[in-house]
Image (cartoon, rainbow, N blue to C red):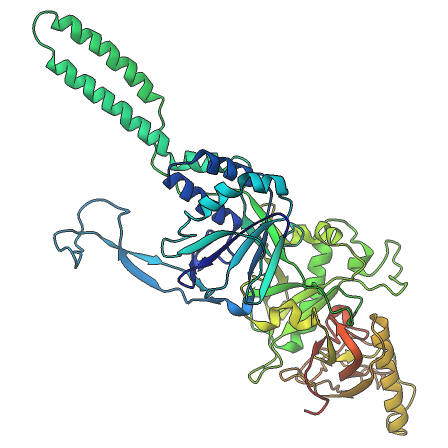
Length: 571
């Protein structure tokens, strides 16, 4: 593998390191800056070899590395427990007696040790831009330095580090690449001068020099006291002059105590999507959806999906860095004409808890599905200010939902274990899936001309044809088999059925209070004399399809969201 690769494994199976933004949470994935600080600590503690120092300074200028880690399914966050331990932070007597040494007293303070279980799976940093010539020049020094590293993070987080030739592992891995545009997580990084800053923060040289000069002054003071006899007055005066000079040197020495090392620069990382199966077909929406997780607010059922989608779309429109928002965000050109030519625009997808024995359909968050024809740079340029602070940290997004309350969302953390918040659960990436079923009802693009009561067979055929056209509109082929019903094939999804009631002379007008299942808001009909039909669908394609798959008239507000399904149409 070209470039430079450094690998390490956790000897105890645990990565014990505290997230710098939250002392109650473990830092995972490990930040490249933390790994560099572990290398620097080994260098400082073992004599500061000149070649190793040059290798570290060269490493500072290589830029942000790729990070290869064990797949999320192999990583488990241990529950954080507060323990009380004797500490050396505060000096002075204490009423707490050490059991092992009753004559010694030290106070016990609350401490936490957040940890992540990774077993024996190796981790890697890879710099693809490192030239072979430079790697060969520093290989020996780096290999020697890696052998000196004993820990990354807490002193109990023991590691073995080495120079690797490749990033292979017996476990499934995920690779994260630098990308500040809509990054999945932010990591501390090293840059030119980091080694010098760490040296100044620890200040070993300053404290050693201060101690040395203080010793010189003490020796001069002792020599002064020892002077006696004739000429002692003149000799003492000479010693006082020397002491004054040494004191001047002492004043210029910084002897501050060690400062906890901090790195101020951060870089965004996103997961590199595995290459899709060549036989799979993609929809017009990018499989790399941006997931926003709920972090505060009421627990909402799936029937509130439309309210959440509309509020999130309003926030996107309001906070777009370009006003008016571009057509791929709003769905309309500046003149008000709708986006046509078969192009999709931004879709808001509700993410409910479904497809589980205990699924109840409540919303865990929402996602932004981008049209594939929009570049990642344009997505970050338009939506970055809404999602990220200038420092690179994720912003919180508040959605005003009226009587439902206020929902607060933010970028999903990489370590979030909830399956419904994983992008690949909804896209089927990379292999794709042949079988899909709707989680939210599919709203037909039109009204069947056939009368369901007079000719049910003809009505069924027309509905099937409309569902097939809905698949073509999002860039996939017609399904080989289609089934539809009022009940979803995914447990936890609300039913798709409508109520009618006469309203001011229009007997077929949709009642604004009617709903799907227990109050699911219907997608507004454009006619006053009929209700646009809504169904749950089961689709089977002749070839694997990589999603997200969203069908029908309400697809940009979360209706018609489908999810891969294993098995046949029977439930």
